[in-house]
Structures are given as C-alpha cells and as structure tokens.
Image (cartoon, rainbow over all chains, first blue to last red; front, side, top):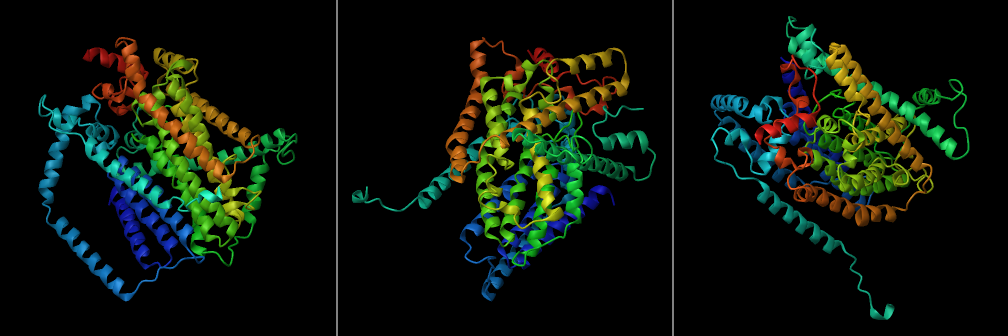
Length: 207
Length: 428
C-alpha cells in the first residue's frame, strides 16, 4: 500500500465516520461539528486528487461559509441552552428510504462505468496535454495546480483542447452560467434583506 | 549532489539524492518530507507566539509608560512567555458543569488546526514553502476563515452568557470582514495574474518601485484597507469585540483555563503573523529587500559558481528579510492595539459594511480598469507585468514555477519579469 492509498483510506474513513456521526447526533451544534470533520476530510480527498482549487473552494464555501451561518442561525434562534433535534419515527423512515435510494443510484452509476476505457482515455489525454500545452504555461494534469487552467477555461480558453484542434476554438466559457447563478444569489440576498427589515410602521403623529 | 533548491519539493530531493535505491522509496520520501515540514512549521508556530507575546507585553509597557516584564530570563524578561507557558501546562483542565463537554474540549484544537494549516501555503522565502500551491492565497484565506468556527463553538459550548455573546459577535464580525479582505487581496492578484504566493513574490524582484503596493494607485490604497480588515479578521483591537474585557469579562474564552486557553492565544498570534505574511507577499515585496541586494547576491552567486550552498544562503537571507517584514507588521498591529480605543459592535459592523466593503469594491473595479487605461495612455507600450491576466495567458510561465528539477543546467531562477518580457518579445 502506498502512502497515497493509505491517505485515501484515512480521509475516506473520516468522511464516512463524520457523516454517520452527523446522522446519529441529536444536538444541532454537535452535528455542525461533525459536518466540519466530514467536509474537511472530503476536501482532503480533493487535495489528494491534486484538485487544489476544488478542495479549497470546498473549505471556503461549505465549511467556512455555510456552516458558520448554520451555527450562527442556531445561536440566534435557539430558545434553550443546547437545542436538540427531535425526530419522529415517520421522518426517520422517510429519510432512510431517500438515503437508500440515493445510495442505490450512486452505486449503480459507479458500477456501470467502464473503468478500463476511462483510464485509457485519461492516459491518452494526459499525453496530448503533456506534448502540446506544457510549453504554453500549463503543467501536467498529474501535477495538480489546476487554478490557471480553470481560470482560462472559465473565460472560454481551453489550450488543452484547442491546441490539439489547430486554430479552431472548440469551447465556450462558463462566464454566462456563472453570472446567471450570481444574479440568482443577489436576488435571494435582496429578498432576505427585504424580509428581515424593520417592520415597524412609523406613525406620522409620533414624529 | 543535486542542490536542494533545484528540487521541486523536499520529497523529490529526498527521493533522488538519498533514497534512490531504497525499497518502497516513494512513500518513505513522502513521509520524511512531510515530517520535516511539520516539525519546521510547528517550531515556527510555537516560537513566533512566544516572541510575539513577550513583544506585546513590552510594547504595551512602553506605551503605558511602564517597563513590562523585566525579571525572568535576564534584563529584558525575554523568558517571561516560557515561564507563563510552563504555568499554563501545570494548571488543572477545567470544564464548566453547564458546558457541552465535547465541543468545549474540541474547539481550541479547531482554532489551532485552522491557524496552523494556513502556514502550509505561506512561503517563507524563495521556494521555502511546504506546498507550492497554485491557489496558495485562496487556500490561506479559506483555512483562516475556519478559525471563526472554533471561536463560535467555544462561545456556544461554554454554557455562559459572556462566552455566548463573544461567540456571536465574533461570528457576525468575521463573516462580514471576510468579504472586503478577500476583495482587497484580489487587487494585487489582478496586477500579477497569479494566486501563487511564490510567483507573486517573484514579480516584485528589484527595487522598491517594483513592490505591488506601488504598482498602481489602487494597490496603494488596497494595502491600507487590507491591513485594517486583516486586523479585524484576527480579532485584534480596536476590533476585539469577541473578547471585549470591559463588557464581556473575557468574551468567548471566559470559561477556559490552562493549556486550552493558551491554544487560542497561540493561534491568535500565529494568525497575526499569517495575515501579515500575506500582506508582505501581496504588497511589500515578499522576500526582496527593496534595494536590489538580493538580486545582486543572486547574480554574484551565479557568476562565481558558488553552487547550491550559495543559492541556499541567499534564500536564507531572503527568509530573514521576510520574517523581519512580517514581524514589523505584527509590531504595527500591537502599536495600534495599545493606542486606539475599542469600537462598539455597531460601529465595527458599520465600518465594514458601509465603508470598507464599498471602498474595496471600488478598488477592485479600478484595479481591473487600470491596465486598460494605462494601455491607452501609453499607446500600447506598457510593461507586460502591468497587463491583465489575459495577455499573460499564452506567454510562457516564469522559470521559478516550472518544475525546477528538469533544468539542472540552470538552477538559478531568473527574475520572473525578465523572462516574461523575453517571452512576449518572441511572440510579437
């Protein structure tokens, strides 16, 4: 077993263990803690795959952003000292069914992939990238450092594909979908600010 | 022997020069390199707070017309922090009866790990970095944003009103201040087109004029905004609302004592150095001294064939320069702490959301437009470094970030600017 495999098993075990602990815990804030463990370990899995950017984004968005808001929300709204989550048997049953269905979906899709062909295609892809795009400031995929290619692909420049195809540009950027998503988020923010505003109506006589 | 500098990482060096015929050498080399890095950073992580806490007490003493610690360890009391540390280890590990025991015990470790993890991507000199990540700056900001979770958990789990108030203030403050901090950190990134801190450092080779703070008017202002926001994000006065001792006893760490309490402070002082280190790399020239001495030494080592030892010595000098710059910024934070009064919580939030956030957005916009403006003003004769990232996309990357072990013949990384200029010349 190489060090890579060992680290994979460690991170995978911590991810699954944290996820199980989230389900088994009753206390909401402890759940958030176990979610940190689980999400942090899955970020570790991304780092192990040399996907630095995705791993870091996982840490920043989910652990540093969403979880802080979750804990903050619990602290603002809880009435007792440590809020417990009460689940009824019906809810447990429904959640269990959904979880088993999702597991079946994921398992069947993993099993239906022809891994030999994927590995062969990936290897040939690596060779092309090695030859063509190393001189153009792009490093080999197995080295990681995906930030530079990701940023360029975002703007619609894909040297790893375009260089192979000659002068034609094959790819379009991801800027428009990103902007649409960010406008959605802006709408949500404005809506939240509107809902949370002070609703006291100032009577003209009180002024 | 292959020079250590020419290896892309310590693991490669160990693999190729020591363990080349050892069975299963890949994992062994990886483990050795990881252990060496962990020990080096843990040492720095332990020693830096030791020095900074002593410095803080001396600075506070001087500002308040006192002497500060004078007895322990000779004339200047420089062993005071170590004595405090020994005392803290001996103390009983208390946990309040009302506390959530698991979270109460775990949260100091969470703060500690988040702060420690940020040092993985912080370069201490030319290539002196544990993991030379291409998204190094992003990684550091992401990990330091996890620190707030430990503080919030500490406040929540203590079972005390003071601690709860401290934790809530910390959450509100840090979540707000993260936004202008990230935007301000992006302003110099626009000028260089790289999130890799080593690469950003290479861009600032040469005189002080090449430092990114003097790159354009927007980076100049961005430095001061960044430093203000960074001070707030490591909850230092005048923004230390989470532990405001005049209102909240000690805020989020009211119930902590002993070694767990000291973990919070180790993390705080290490984070002060981390944000200062980011500021040094993004604005103040990284490991370059600003007078061209490092370049002269580099040239001298290259011309006289001093080999890897000479290179290494120059890098150690760079490391000393970087630590000196970072420490002076930390000193500045202490100076501010003991000079300015604490803001109220509404003033803290207003400063961020009404002033610093719009200012940083304006700076960001200005920094993106500036190269185009400069381009039209100078009829296309701009320096390629000042051009936005699109211009650099297809030009060859600087030698410093290429896998160095492939270029044994030329281990000297030439200044990045020169190489980029050559590259752009060839394309044109």
